[in-house]
Structure formats: structure tokens, C-alpha cells
Length: 374
Image (cartoon, rainbow, N blue to C red; front, top):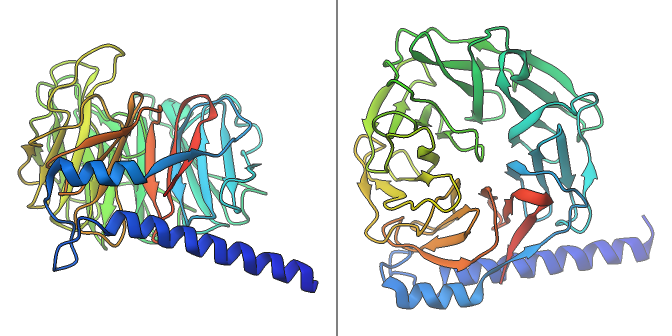
């Protein structure tokens, strides 16, 4: 590397570090409690936060809808969407490389999990053979089809990883129970888990492939599954990587194929947030967010819920109570673990994800991708 190239790289690194520090300062600053957690200080402090934060669009050059998103850092992120499209940036969104799997143009990618700038696993949804899993180890230069669904009644919605080797994917019910895939080799191979430990699904119940967050994990073995479409919106929990499950009702409205829990986020084994509502445009979505303090065994409606349907939610790293939720009508912020929310950006997004260095990204319709900036 030339001296000039090295100097430019150092300047970029310093600038990225300064920006990350600024985002961290905004997110952990004005409402910080003595114990380091975000204080429960109400809408006055929320207003201070929302004045200082905003999404900066990162033109992708694409027009497809990106419902799959994996934030690796402030510099690296992956998005996956319709028409079999996968994009990757390694320069903070200044440029995007089209790294779509060859021949995938007819597929609908709805979830992507990335381990770093080179390795990622992407899920295509749909009935029968439309549900597939692809894996890359070289930044998308080459892809391997690791799984193709051979059960005509299965429809896979989301996937999640506990670590770089162990992960799960979930399908809508088959024979009255949700169907779970498991991998222990980083997504290279998959097997269907036995269904004896899965409770029966409600009539009409299913998952929503809306933002890649209907199946989420935390720690070494805990995983949660979000449902809708049935009489009640439920969250299913497994503490043994998908072998046995328990089901809990949430107060998020259901009773219609368009209503239920669309996305989950767990900061720890106990502290969780659920968002959802009615995805149909123009339909009211009261009580569209809920919180759990006991690992998803019980849920209560947010005191001030998100104002409309939301399809994505994520905790902000290195905070105890700060989270973001997104949907077609905007973004909301909470400082108190999901009990109260305030809107701060009206732009349309489908999903949101944060990396450990405060690289928070969002993506959605018409190729929209953005990074959170101070």
C-alpha cells in the first residue's frame, strides 16, 4: 500500500470512529442513569434524543424491497430482497456491490444473517421448493445452495444463528405444528428437527416473513418465534435450540390473517420487545408493541405503544433500555425498554439491525437503505 493510500485509510478509520462515538454519545448520553442504563425519563428526554438522531440514506442503486438486513459494523452491512437480490457494502454505504446468487432472480429473499464481511447465509421464502437457503464464504463471489425445501406444505419465514455454527430456520405449520430446521456447521447443511416438543398451532396461525425477525435468538440456546393470524398473537420460546417449546399469548391484536407479532428482539434471556399490528395500509394498529421481563413467559402492552404497524425492532448495543422500531410509516425510539415510544423519522423501512460498534442500519422498499447518524 502506498503512503497516500495508507493515509487515506487512516483518515477513513478515524472519521468512522468519531462518527460511531458521536452516535454512542447521543444514544447513551442525556438520559443515562447512575447504573449506566438509560433512565426512565419520559418524552422530554425522548425529544432530546430524536432531535439529535436521524437516518442518512445510502443510495443502493436498486429498486427492489430489502426485507432482509444484517449489520456487521458501521462499515459493513448486507441486505437481501426481492428478485433474488443481495447487496453488500464495506465502506459504510458509499458503494454497494451486487453479490446476488446466480440464477436466483425468481426468488424472494426475506432474511439474511452475516457473520462478517465474507460469510453470510440468506433465506428465500415461499411454498415448496421456493424456500431455500444459500451460503457464501467469499463475500458473495460464490454461493452454495445449502437447503431446498421438499415439503409442499412448508413455507419458511425467518432464520437465526446462536453463533457462527449453530442456527435455526422456521416454517409455517405443517400438520398443525411449526416446522424447525437446524444447522450445526454454519449453514452448510440443515435437518428438520422432530416436532414432538412443539405445541399445536392455532387455526390460521403463521409467521410473518416481513423483516427477518419472526425468529430470533439470544445467547447459546434461547430462541423465540413470533406468530399472527390466529385468535391470539403468540410468542413461542425454546431454551434448548428448538427441541422443546412453550407458547405465551401477547396483547398485540390478532384474529385476522394480517395481524399479529411481526418482529421480536431480546437484549438478554429475560428482556424482550415485540412489535407488530395490522400490515394493511390505512388500518389502525393499537397496542402494536409489548414488553416481556421474564423471557417471553408473559407480555404486557407498552404504556405508550408504537403509533402504527411495525415490522422491525432492535436493541441498541451497550445500552440497557434503548431500542429502535421501524415500519412503513416511520421509525420510533424507546429509552425505557419498550414501555414508551416516540417517532423521530417518517421514512419507510421494513427492518432494522445494530452492530456492536453502534452501526445501526435500516432497509425497506424501493431500494431504501440507511444508517443512523448523529
